[in-house]
Image 1: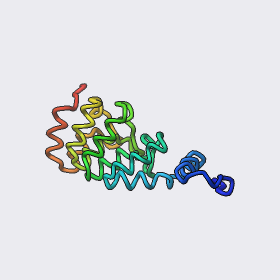
Image 2 (image 1 turned 30 degrees about the horizontal axis):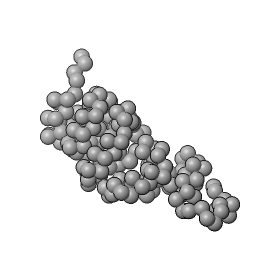
Image 3 (image 1 turned 90 degrees about the horizontal axis):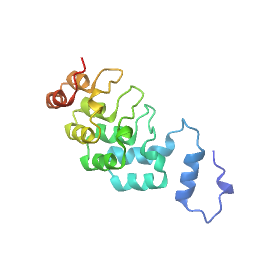
Image 4 (image 1 turned 45 degrees about the vertical axis):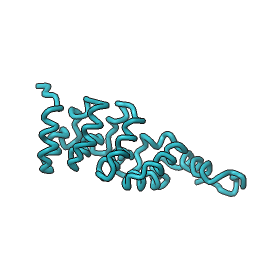
Length: 162
C-alpha cells in the first residue's frame, strides 16, 4: 500500500494514482475499476485517459476472470466504435490474449453474437477463429448460444485443418 503522507503536496492526483497502480499487489484489480466501467459503458475518452496514464492497462487483466478491456467491451456489445479504437492500438498478438477460460475477445464475440466485433478482430488477426478456448473453437461457442448469423460468418473464416 502506498503511504500517501510521503507523497508531496504538489503531486497531482493522476501521478499518485499511477504510482499506486505500479506499487499495488498483482492480484489487486481495484485500480482498474475506472477502465472496466469505461469499457463496459463504451466511454472511449475515459478509457483513453486511463490508458495514457497507465499504458500497461491496454493489455492488463482487469477482472477476476483475467479479462482485458477488449474482452469487456466486446462482451458488452454497447459501442462498436470503442472496440474499433481498442483494436486500432493493439497488436495482432495482443488481440489473442485470453481470459482464465482460454477465451480471446474473438471467442467472447462469438458467445454474445457480436458479429461486427468479430469482423473487426478478424481483419487485424485472421488466426483468431482457430484459437480454441477450454470450451472449444469460437464457432462451437456461437453454435452453443444459438447465434446463427455468427455461425454463418464463422463458417467462412474458420480454417479446417483436418
